[in-house]
Length: 137
Image (cartoon, rainbow, N blue to C red; front, side, top):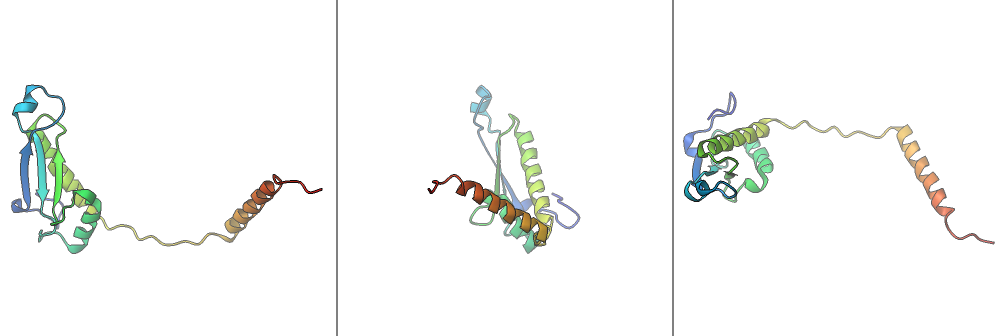
């Protein structure tokens, strides 16, 4: 499965298992295993660079298992073939997002004028609140 020019996933890295879907569908739900569980061994993958693996782990969240695999469970449609396609599309999308290097944040300093305006606003507000107190004779 091709992700981009540099990354291609081998078949041994993917494992599919099928289960019965929940929800509506009549007798089809009781008889046919249409839900797909796609497992990708990301930690053991020789095709993913270490930086991509780290970003992928953060992006995957709770879909990342303790042994370093990503598990995607899809039961959107009543068709097993379509659920397989959806699972693979989601995996490709997740890996592509992990390949994008995040833009480095450049810390900025507030302008002198904005600091003055903020402090003036705070002072005015404190005066309004002070006037709400008890009046001395």
